[in-house]
Image (cartoon, rainbow, N blue to C red; front, side, top):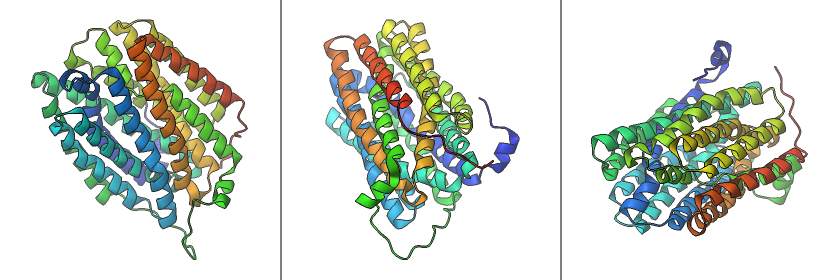
Length: 400
């Protein structure tokens, strides 16, 4: 994995490293479950592809929608850590529900509660990163946290593969083990980070007002629109797992698909985050969308494992190019006292788009063919490129 230069390492605040390690541990816990969940739903609980799309769409969109409330609340309170801690704790406490789920209804409940936890912690955590990081290192800070987060996202499926082989495809036993790193993440956040002091204010005010929305500015709302269109193009990664299953890969080895994707993602997130501090944001985002088009077209070709692996690798590159970049773009245009609200509104729009995208992906997959799902993703990616290139978002000037 490409690591940051030593001088950047020395400048990076310790809080960024702690937040990255917290994300790493929670992603190990979550991905041990999520890399197996589509297969668990289809093979053990007897769910169909549309049901997988609905569950994943509802879960991921709920996480993004909840962020608008947690982000706004963090702005109102002037505190980020407490809300982030509650979100991580809820995520950790829902893990046993997956191991005990007897039917699709119980599993949906567990998935929704888990994603509520993600939603509660997401916007305050991103705002905390923006609060801690110096402006000239902001892109690198988001990239580093995302890179550490993604290390956990490929270690989790790797552990899932090993345990599935060891325990003869016992999904529930693997889900129980996932509880441990989740609890470790909560403990590290509780004891490992000191939140910066908020700037004193005379009184607390409601961040969700017409005046505050106007303060966010047109450039911010363009980013929101681009992010929503982008999310339509990037439906749930559960469909990558199901594509691998079509190729006849043994169940125990299918999580390796997510290992490959997240390994590429982890290796690319920091370098592209650092590049975003020097390169035009619109050009870099458009490049990431072009890579997503390529990934969709490759995955649409056929389900042979080598083709699927190539498409998944391209998917990982596009994630590394764009995920930290979008967070950085929001931080650059939003006022400091409205960052939580800004991330919340951004994720609200993306959450609604994710619900539509995942349900549509499941419908196309079930009624037509898997290829139609990925061709639709490529089409939305091209539309997002047009929106990006014609947006009025300007590159911010930064010191250093």
